Length: 295
Image 1: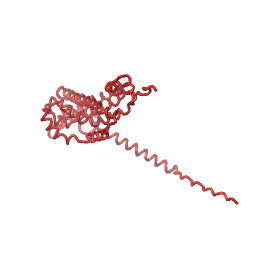
Image 2: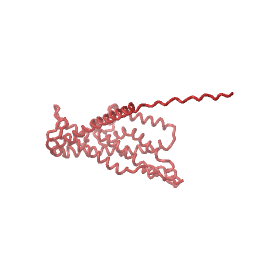
Image 3: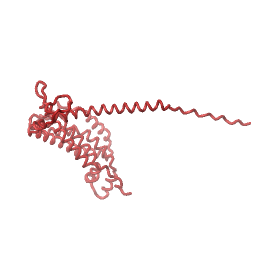
């Protein structure tokens, strides 16, 4: 007589009661919302102080809605020596640094992205290590080198130093952007007789235009807000950028012209906002590579 094997009943799946799961999810959602509100306020409060204080005739360090509005703070700071010349110096330094960094970074990232060489990995790790070095630790030897090459109090010297310190991160970012461009597009151009540099200029760079814009903005904003390097390497007041010129609003014995400081901060931030809008307009198109290679 054959006995059928007993079928083991599957254990019942445990279910979390809705009365317990729903409050847990709701509590986590409330905690996330409150955290985001706190983080948002930490950014909005300084911006609100700058906006309100720039039009407040009696601006203080605290955030308050002005009782009356005035443009006297802007009129007081909107002079050639106090605002326009420092902003022009900042534009020269930042634009020169960003342009030089992008050009050299592209030429350095191209062989790292397209050629399999033995020292690629070691070089990339060296680049990553270079991006971690603090500028303050480099200033003493850099200052001695600038004395030898007579680059002190020179805008060109500041541009070269800032570009050199921005290159490690720029190379790393540009290499990653360049990896997303298919090599098959360049191979098609090589078959048609194009050189490597021509393929880079006409094929790769147009397709990675958003990446170039990201790196340009990243380097530009870093150079625009850099205070320490121009403060150490520049001596003449007519060569000081806006990041250093803002230091003049802090007077002796703790006296600060808060209204003029806020007005200068508004003018100081305007070029960065314009740059973001222009770059977004120029690099708004995504990588249009679909259908770029015929099968």
